[in-house]
Length: 215
Image 1 (cartoon, helix red, strand yellow):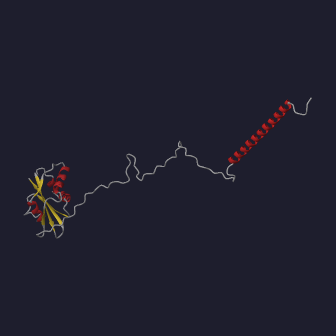
Image 2: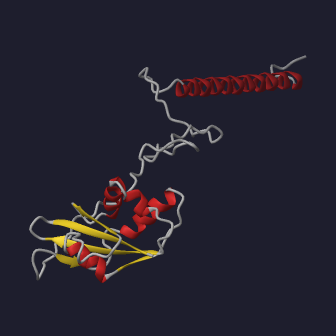
Image 3: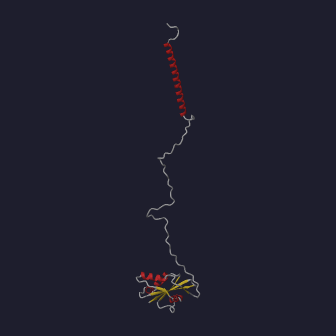
């Protein structure tokens, strides 16, 4: 018979119920904590909450290089064989201007040397017509002939005298060759050498040249 006190089995069953309730409460609290944490995480990942996304530039990809624009050189090179736009102008030998000579005697005075390169002009004419070049020199006799305007008494036997505008030997030879016996005189194969003489006329500013054949 029971005396109103719980038996050992009844007490044990009650203890089990209290333990189950405690475990259920602990499990409920754990579920609530997990739910709260998930809600907090979702709220944090939703952004700033004002609807504006903030974009942050990422690192540059080192595997992709932007093309580099090379600066254009101010100097343009021409291809091989091309003609340059700038051509060198060939230098021209200036025409010798008449040299002013102050003569101590009038009306003419002699010039030293062969300023018009008359000897070279003589030989150029001879070789161009099949004759050999000959030696030559400046002589006092040829200078005297030039100063006296080619008058026969002071001049040697075989000579030509020509007045020219400047000391130009080519002009002298051209004028001699144009004379009736001029070409024969210049191309004479028996001539051994020639003498040259120059004179200056102050009154007219002109020049005179005498060419003398020496046999």
